[in-house]
Length: 183
Image (cartoon, rainbow, N blue to C red; front, side):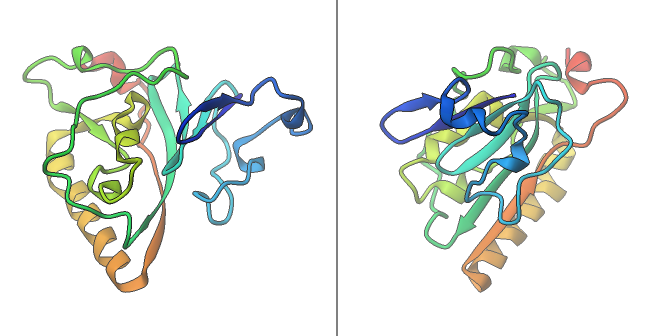
């Protein structure tokens, strides 16, 4: 597992640093970060890349070209108006194999959808981090515009009542990878 920590002005790969060698064999749940309230999910492939960004942590599976999970915290101060913000997908320089918009053909039942929503971090200087390709998964149009939209709305309502909400999200896995059937 490669663990990458990103910071505001610079990016630091800590995979080979001596400080992290004490975690060997390193697991995502062994890495303390503010996005996982009671620890990060366990059971991900040991070849996954764990990328820790200021607003979320993602365990990315390059073989399946999808995040196994993301963890993030939404607060009253992080939610903002996203109508004028860019939605352009950015290549994640820390991960070799990701899905791209070209993996989706016109008329496909799948959309390129974010796990961490843009609006939840539009009130922060880190909102562009949600546009990294490692934050995108294939999701059906009906799910994306129906139940998933409603879930995101319900999370923001909970944040308005509670002040902050910790979230761990990820795709459901089928026997055959969805990425293989996108085109």
